[in-house]
Length: 301
Image (tube, rainbow, N blue to C red; front, top):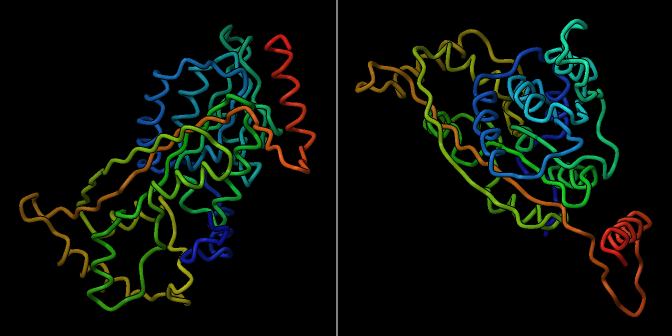
């Protein structure tokens, strides 16, 4: 498994995007989170603690749903910006006079300690990571043994209509390339996850104007490609882009609305018990040794 960084993501641009303040969630992210949350009905494990990764961009509606699904569980709200973690926590805060809030699980505005949570929820974050393998490894460390990861991200066919328009006009790519779900599965296994299950679907959205289409895209993300246009675009260029979108994307059969397709990838994986690799000289980390000893006690050894 290669440890190289994604070739079409500029780390500086990715960090700048992660640092932009956000107080609301994009509609698409909320919808993807709703579909992912519905899949939890098939998982019997009830976490005592769980983590929500970047909940504002990932979906505040999902944060409320997950808090209601696991009302007694401790929640860690992990965000690059502390104020955004507080936005998520305040969105589900109960008034002091509401009895339902007296026994609610605590919510902490910080990343979870290693091995502390039974579920890690990360909606629509992975495709914008400059070092996705490092992020996946961080998620693996945070999970307790037998805990599980739930994540989603954009796939390679996302916004192909927009990419085609840019290609026809001879412009640089409108966005970085997204990773295939099979490659995500390989990265999960490489990080130590077991039984990864990957799924994919496409959502086709239509917009009544180029301006509305571009507004939605600005909420979903940014162009992180290293070879993107390096300066500011002017009003004349934007007007030309809107004309091109109106001319080339308009669907006559749908009253001239402008379609845009999003490929969505869903992933689920477990953190298995650590395995001891035996050789002439074997090294075992203290954390792995502690986990193995705890498993042995639980099994009656």
